[in-house]
Length: 406
Image 1 (tube, rainbow, N blue to C red):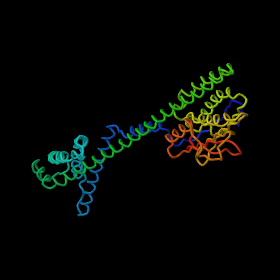
Image 2: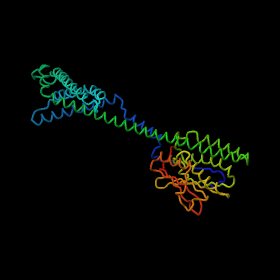
Image 3: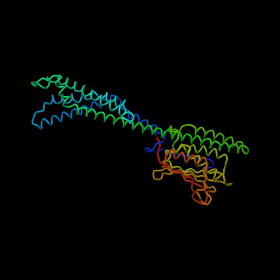
């Protein structure tokens, strides 16, 4: 704990745990990673499709073998495997064509009549071609596994297979179509969800940028007004105030050490606050005492960038700025039930009768409230209340506790 006159410092040691939650910047990155995860390389996709057709062929061969055993006949494994695998692999040959059809003929309200007509015609042609190929394979492999059996011509095999299995084979092809459309609908739905996530994150990012752009000129105007006022009384103090202001502006306008423009570690935020206090200290001189109490184990907690400055500025303007004597501002941080609680208290006049409804929030507090809502939704709170004791005001901010990287 540090008691300071016109300045403050923060020393901390590092302890890290895994973080939970994410900022809008992280959300955009996460959605991009998820979108990339959906994209499977073509080689892997086609190997998987080949594996599925092979598995179906082996299941069909197993079913044929079980039937032969059931009726008391021996299982000619070579002939069974050749017949069943030829049957399913000749189906598999049409998978690329069906993938192309599914992607180019959408099954939506506007196009479904044309799509169904095309698929009916194409499937009929594919079944005929499939059985021509299947019959030819049967002719070629007949001598390998069927010694002594009568030879069947290509025409005989084709006519027999087409007459006995045309409808069932068409149903099998339509099942393939249904699976492919289901997969296509799923991918499109996931892409829409990821796109919506990206748009929401980008919108939040834009809102936060607008709020930050609003807050910095407000802070700068107040600081320059203080310099202008001080210039007529103490030129050296005004010069020192400008030098400290330049350091603070360099700090607030650069990205954070972790690369996130909207969230920083509590340690980094306290260092920024220290620069701001140096600026204000030239105005109040020895009247101001700032006490900062931030436990070392919270130094890497993630907080909104520039969140403490408007709270402390509010304490200066409505606390010590409204009284003639010395004043004190206390900044504290604690972890409570998975939440990080930041409090800024002053010993100024406080609320009239303790009525929190009488508080009129300026640009700093209202801007901070909106930024918290954009970053954390309903998992945040900013409360203005009477400080413990007889006098003073306290502003308390509660946000989800997270720790940044080492």
